[in-house]
Length: 419
Picture 1 (cartoon, rainbow, N blue to C red):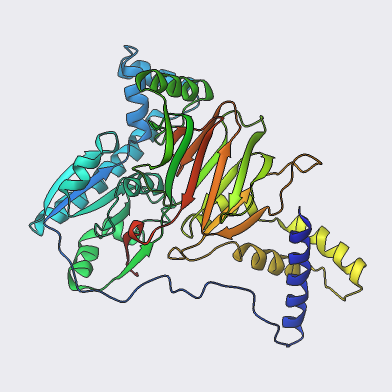
Picture 2 (cartoon, rainbow, N blue to C red):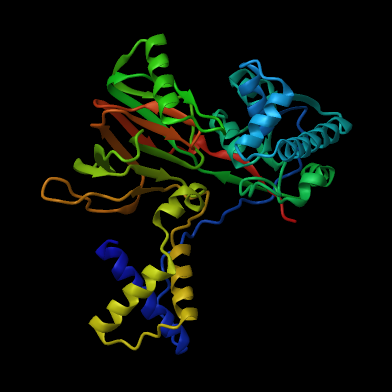
């Protein structure tokens, strides 16, 4: 834990004490931007692409069917792994039925529908559609959003298995089975546009391979991931970009840069807002949007009550303040600190987080976490990757330079539909 974190916790402890005594301390910094824009007139697209996730049942079926296994063999193999064939099939059927419900609802309104598996989803589909519906969970929504480069094309997420998926980026779960009601509200204009800021990536330097590896929902093993990058490197010539080249992908949640082998320290140089370059070694670097501040970035930076209690004890002994250490008080301080890590999806700032920084006489980390408009990273890694929203991986080794920034034209048009 950094000294800055300790100071923040003591400040939060003092703030909570003030609240208990009825005084009014200065408010902590919060974003002044509203998470939603003004209501718009209803819209009814003529053509909608419904992009569906690959269920675990489909994944296992495809995976072992190529090996010549029958359905009965698959049942036995899943049982040996401790997985339930009937359970996977049940979840698959729930997802499939909900997708059919969405498609029928759209067609009843006279809307032309095209159902696309996530593996078939690309720019041709994006160009064809007036709007795109992500039918799955947050992972499917992130994939759909990454390939929509225009801010004029609405993207709507529907959680097709709400009992097993949180679906933060999707419509409220009641609309999964009541999609016609959601459709009526959209047509009547009873919603708000939520413009989510996204990250754009420029690559330059030596030894760059801009061909991505799609990780999909079923994560590749380290060996498979490295092999996939080796194959794409052989299939496409390595390039040297003397000028920054904009990648045709946008990040809704976060960019993560680090060595593929998690036990190996990541070595890189970082410059924030055109400031001086700083050599760093850490477990990796995360750069997120306001949307992503509730996801991986939140879990990288959050504190647990045990740590808060220990820091408040030190603060109490060092300052002499009468800081209560009851479980309720510690819980309040912890919650307030963790809430401060989250900011609005339409906020135009990036939040960078250095994961487990190594600090010594050679390497420093002046800030473990901070807001920025632009972050530049120069790789000094051996076998590293730059992963976009947990689903698309780019090789990012020694000599590669990434410039991470935001642009007004990259906003994602999504729907805010209340219950």
